Structures are given as structure tokens and as C-alpha cells.
Length: 205
Image (cartoon, rainbow, N blue to C red; front, side, top):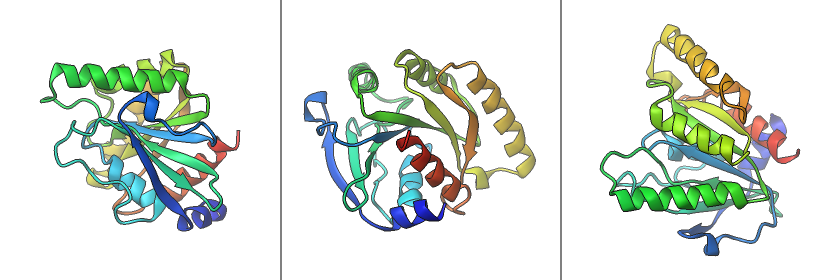
């Protein structure tokens, strides 16, 4: 954990945004992608992991960020974090949703350096149908993923334990899902060290 903390307190730089696959960076380094519904707390979690205030900015209009954002970690670069566009936004036009699906599916299937995806689930809501869709998309792309519960400080401990059990049960039905789940709170820094350590473990395999 100490190694992970040290690494993230060093260089973390924004590299580029890719609105289409042709803009992706060269696959030179291992990558870990972060996926989740709009408003799941993805930006806050990325900021907490990297110990930065605003490395990842929350989109003002959910569903408008239709790009893959790449961040490089380490000096020299050891790996990249990929912030994927959020999904499940009610007001997005059909065309936008279709474009999102195409971009994400192609990225997941074709990115050889993608070591793991972190799938974020809001502790207050558990696994929603749109999350199930994303899990199926990850299964079909044969991308191993960890489920990371966010905003764990926003509900009672008893409710959290209950939701975590339901999330674990949902994960067991998906072949590409990691059996263990990570429980985090960006605000209280809960589970952040464990998540960093898991991340390092994933890129070194």
C-alpha cells in the first residue's frame, strides 16, 4: 500500500482526450479504465486516488462528456488511467447514446493494453439495469473488471452491508467480474489505499 501511495503522490498528468478511436494514444503502457453511471462519483474517486483536487473534472451536463480521457502515472510513465464517459443519463439523445456505445465497446474489445476496468456502483442505489448492461458489455469484451462501490459514507453501515451483499451476488453472475468488491468513499478517503494497491496489482499482471 505504501508503494501505491508513493506512486500516486508523484507524477500524474493528463495526456489527452479521445472522442474517437483514431485519437487513442499508442498502446505503450498498461491501462486501467474507470467506468460508471453519470453522477456515480467517478471524478471524485479519480481525484481521491491520485490525491489531486481536480485532475478529473465532473461534467457540468451529465452525458455530454463523450470522450476517453487518459492520464499518465509515474516518472517515467508506468501506466495510464482511462476515464470513460459516464452512462445511464436520462436526457441524452439517442444518437449520443449510440455513439457512446460504439466508442466504449470498440475500445474495450480492441485495447490490448487494457489490464482491468473498475466499474463504479453507487452505494446508495446498488446495481441498476444500466449497470447490468455495462457488466454484460464487459463480459462480452472479455475484460476483467472490479466492482468499486462509491459514496459509502452516504448511507448507514447496515444498509451498506446489505447493498454490498447484493452487489457481490450480482457480480457472481458475471464471468468477467472480480469476486471481491472494493468499498470506497472519496470524501472520507475510505478504501482508497486498498483500491490503489488493487490497481497496482492489476497492472503488474
